[in-house]
Length: 356
Image (cartoon, rainbow, N blue to C red; front, side, top):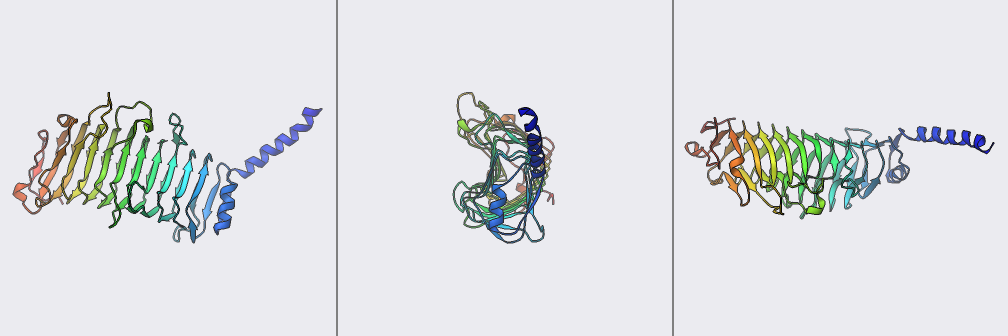
């Protein structure tokens, strides 16, 4: 009899939970935002009305959450705080059409909650406007740690202290259609960085304008305890960089401790010192040298008054494993001096004709 009486109660509880999950909640002010975050259920869609909201929002362990603008033409603006939002272990999260600015740590911080062997999957970030992060030091627009199957699409980042997008131990992920604009007074080191054991990352159709010392940092330097997976002997692997426009920066791209990458179909305009860098910053025992990179079918326009060394090669790397194929090189101020000095012979490159 006791078990029989409990069955309707259990059934009612399940029904109520089902009604709570998947709900649409409209937020119109700071108080309703705080209440909504406190009561979040899996599958909730949080629609945020126009207006100013404080940074410092934190969500942990909620699956299937969507946070978006109520009016995409008049987006809510999250100002200040350490992080505008910090999401820890929130699989299948979607965040879209928000404005974030003035954070002292990161714009968005997304992580696996320190469970390095259990990546968080299925996060999508779309049409975000992120600006004025830092301004100096290792402070990122988007900080992503331990995420798999991540998509970052059509975001604009303007002014950051560290990386526009920093991927640490992320896999099977896509960054597409984003815009990165460096800003005076901000110590940007990279536009996009993939490191810490990251693999199978595609960066495509993005536009970098003065996107830091290394607009594209393919690899990097990571403390060994932070690698995902643990024991990875490369900073990054199987990274594809294609169909981007890269203007300015000390170089267009740096390959740093990477074991296999493709850099194809990109347009490079007026790097300030080098065009590419081949570097090794992690030198732990068993760690592979930077190697196995294909640089193919890129349009490269530079000035000899700025670039004397096309490829800066650091120690402990394997530049002989790089391949250069079919790139079009043009020194705008000295077309007759367009042919680059590369660490290996190029196949099918052209020189001295403006590829634009």
